[in-house]
Image (cartoon, rainbow, N blue to C red; front, side, top):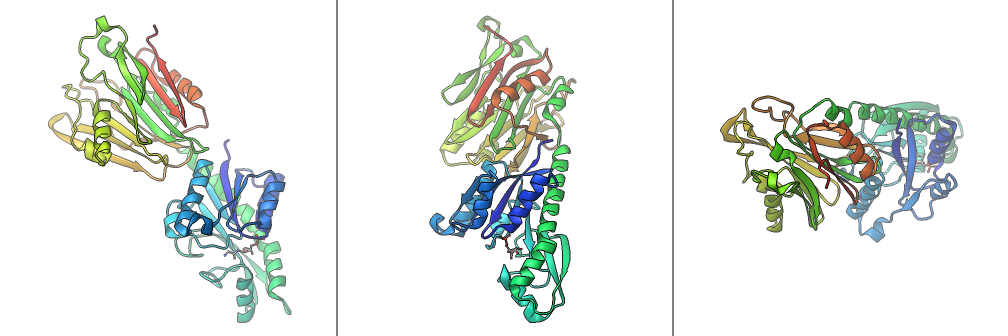
Length: 431
Ligand code: GAR
């Protein structure tokens, strides 16, 4: 089982971070793994605790980065590049804006040292919370773990624990009691519960390899996604039934790949089967099953988007199948789009255009779309939304091997796989 990848955000002493580290060492926090600690305060002792535990740590300065927006962008980049799936705020004394929290729905948890909705929200942090509780004269306080949304301390509550306020308490004494009796227990427990939920959600996704091995003829297929550590992954394959279609290989070009006839003497009609499935343009990766790759690239060169380009195209004119045109674009930040242009139940006069946006692209998740769903006359087009699949932490060569083995032996023709910067091509036809 691949553990949920956790980042802990801190600003101070880091006793809650220590509670998480200890819980991980004891084996109580077993479904998640702390892979990164980020502090917004230089020299915070929490960074020392991370170092002692052998956990990677970072200091990000809002001031040096040029403000909150730039800070949140840098933070998001650091987290996604490491495939973080769960963010834990453990004494993180800064409010994250909606711009950030919206990108991580139910993926950020916070520990607050009071029983929410008491003594919470803007201005209530650290010792101030306990000062306010003592000033009010409450006899019971405690701690709350909750999901973080755009309202400070306003997200859904996960767990709470009450702690008594005793005669003669100072804010420091009360803070210590709340930590010992509530925070250090609740936070690791919540980290385990949410990590389990993340793993369970992964389990609901299809496995691309079994999906493909159960389907002898998906035709052409595109999978775009991200590995658990945050590398972009792209798969494109072609399958064929006719001699003409099977007589192809993928070969590298300066900006991507193209299809080429394996045996020129056997090529009867190059239209629709000779094209550039992959082209890179200004940091974007365009992948399609036809010459719409070039249309998209040309529109981008004019400052227009891929949707605009595909609105000028239709499905393929290969009656009676009217094969869909499937396309995908991976942006430099790893977010991606998929599209399918189909005929409406074989009606030649109408193109249905579907566009799907995966932003932010999640670590360990991909989406697959193909031209067909199986055999038939006409061959039935792909239906429904792209299939959500798990993307394992594999290099390009290993991923290519697994996809290649899953594709039907007779029908598969060529495969292209790219993970991060690494590209692999497999051709059935060999010189
Ligand atoms: C803890 O009491 C935590 O609940 C609180 O700050 C302290 C940090 O201690 N967090 C907030 O007030 C957030 N609004 P630590 O650095 O030793 O974990």
